[in-house]
Image 1: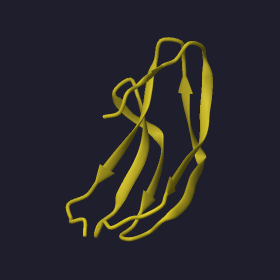
Image 2: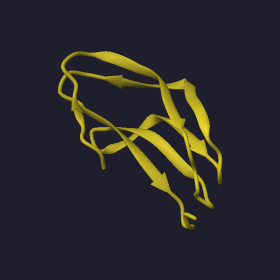
Image 3: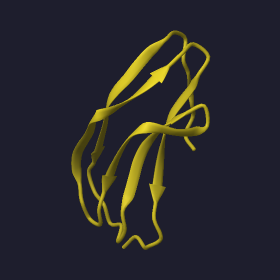
Image 4: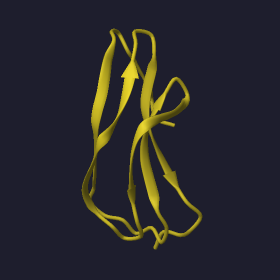
Length: 81
């Protein structure tokens, strides 16, 4: 996991944005949010070889002071060329 951000006030996180410049994976890669150690509501999926910008414009995460917030990257079983 990546370093988390300690939330200092209440707000809603939206429009989760990811830019992948190269992708040699043969399976899907999922980028998503993590709130207090559990999967958050926002995510985007890149299929094998897919690149470019993606944004989750539908889902949001409600955050309160003291929450820990970060992102995750999940790769499915497969290879990287």
